[in-house]
Amino acid sequence: MTTLTLGAPETASTNGTAARRPGLSLLRVDPKGDIGWRVMPQALRRIATFCSRYVTELHADDLIQAAKIGFITDDPGWGLWVAVDAQETVHGHVVAHLEAARRVVFVDQLEVDGGLTPSLARAGLQALDAWARAVGARAIDAATWHSPRKWSRVGFVLHRSLIRRSLTNG
Image (tube, rainbow, N blue to C red):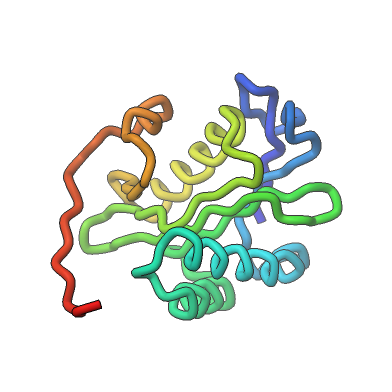
């Protein structure tokens, strides 16, 4: 289990505490330690809530099943991180997966209670970058409802436009 304690608003470190988020730690959820098993139910509830709130084309049951399989099998191409406090309450999560054929990691979900601070963003991106490199990715993609300019502050650039052709009438 990789844990990164969040630093001050302008830094992310392995030994600080987060301003406005005292005592939060960012960790990759895996089955090797007890904490992964303890926080997984909270993470799964967050994934379902995120799907119902923001991503109607992504079926919560399918993503939850993928998260369970990725967790239990310790699939290196599946990533789930949570921001937890000392009581192991989850205050944020990131879900990502490797698209192996494209050698790109795609961020499926990212949400933090109370909003994303600069220190949380940096800590999360450091962890995501390290994992993406370890699984052989060349880039990280994400879809967002927010302006791409907002994400440019942390190194994302507008890469392509997403278009869709619906296969349903409703």
